[in-house]
Length: 125
Image (cartoon, rainbow, N blue to C red; front, side, top):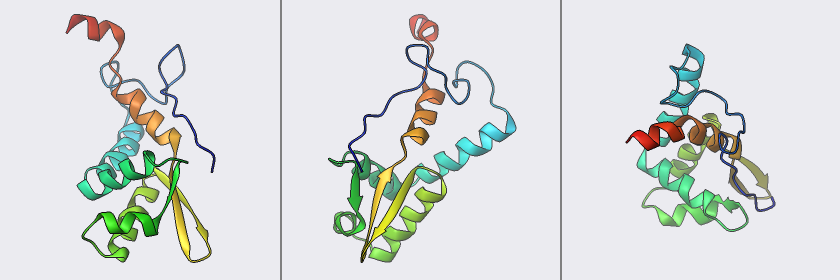
């Protein structure tokens, strides 16, 4: 997978998936979708895994390189990665014995767009 630059939606007039946190209330479906993502990120191990994958040169990492960073078994790491996949934050591909993971930029764009504070709100703080 090629190295990708993450573009933050909502800047320079781009469309975002939903209104930002400080702009308008979420509807029920948007809230459920975002809650699933935040729940997946609510565990320190999964948050570290996301950080390790996102910061990896080349944009992808083998599970065999993630496991040694934790005092957890490989099946436990795989379980955490599965939860991140189910939340739509990462994807993977099996190559022989190993599985390689990468971040899905659209999921991060959604989070960034939701958490972005409008420029007018920034000025009043």
